[in-house]
Length: 151
Image (cartoon, rainbow, N blue to C red; front, top):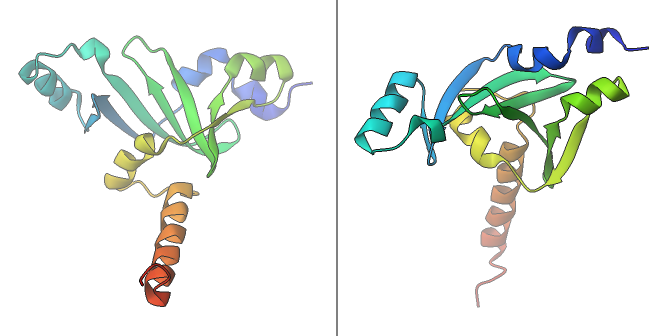
């Protein structure tokens, strides 16, 4: 039996999940409006077809801080940070078959998708990359204080 959450989230609903913020990305540049993107593409002789939509979704399919990356045809994937070693990609087809939300783990990071949202003021539910950076800064500070690498 499918639980109530799964009844609400069917294949077609993945594209209709409400986002909190949308950014447009092309060649590592991020824009808040479609007009800004179009102007950039025109000035740089780029096709808008190579741009992406990045949507910040606070919660989706049992995870928080989800980012949907799609092209203008609507094809895309939903990502979330799992831990400092990797991220998850939502698999809607397997979720339907398994009758539970399925996030497939991938090693690596998706920091480049999160940074622009942070710069625009999004406060993440569980900002793993901020925690990693904060921990590394504390370690560097201790190393400098103790002069571990100075002769």
